[in-house]
Image 1 (cartoon, helix red, strand yellow):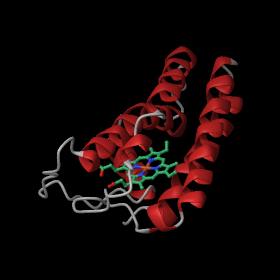
Image 2 (cartoon, protein in one colour; image 1 turned 180 degrees about the vertical axis):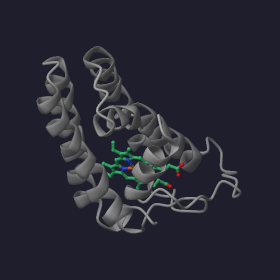
Image 3 (cartoon, protein in one colour; image 1 turned 30 degrees about the horizontal axis):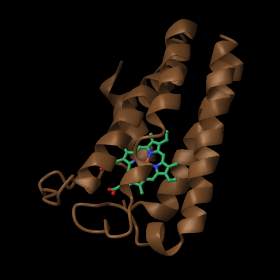
Length: 149
Ligand code: HEC
């Protein structure tokens, strides 16, 4: 995979900023834990995008990644409890002040990943691709409202 494709992808999701130098010192490290959970989501999501963008669709590998995403998608959310808006978080205050809207965005993402899993099982690139970019839009839509750049 080309480095350029990866950087472009990450840039589009507004993931360029990095607070890695700030430690999460709270017990259980809720901020760090949810950030790692999002990185784990990206690790399965990104290779699917690279396959599509570079025209190297591998149906079986794509389907395995889509299935893995239905597991990883569950992990960040429990770590957004009420008192966890502190450095090094990149979450916007709105996560807590507009919790209903955050929940709606989360549900849209879960539903889209469900569709992607089903679409990937068809092993048809057009079907898989359409579902993939619908998930992508749900990442972007939540980030634009709830994640700092
Ligand atoms: C419902 C909202 C929501 C959805 C959907 C969502 N994210 Fe995020 N994401 C966030 C928030 C909020 C943060 C900031 C977490 C923090 O720093 O406390 C974040 C952070 C991240 C990070 C940075 C983690 C770090 O190291 O700081 C990555 C990578 C990421 N998301 C990838 C994705 C991808 C890929 C998708 C879709 C497949 C996605 N996210 C879907 C809300 C969302």
